[in-house]
Length: 55
Image 1 (cartoon, rainbow, N blue to C red):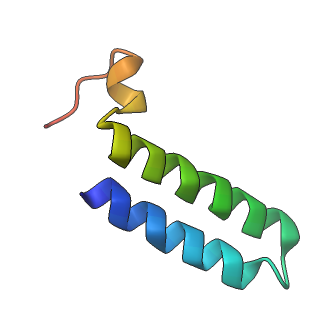
Image 2 (image 1 turned 90 degrees about the horizontal axis):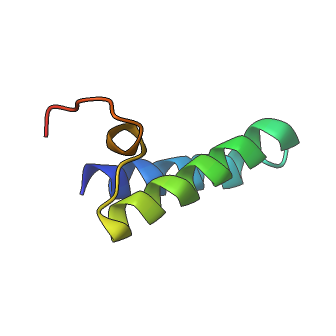
């Protein structure tokens, strides 16, 4: 659930920032979409790479 919230916040921030700073806006939108994807699939990039996470 936390990844979904973080993803939504990054997505909103990316849309807001995209008008002034196109590159940063694009980075935030991509990060937000990826976090939402992780949230929906229940998948974690860090765990997939073998890094131990708390949960």
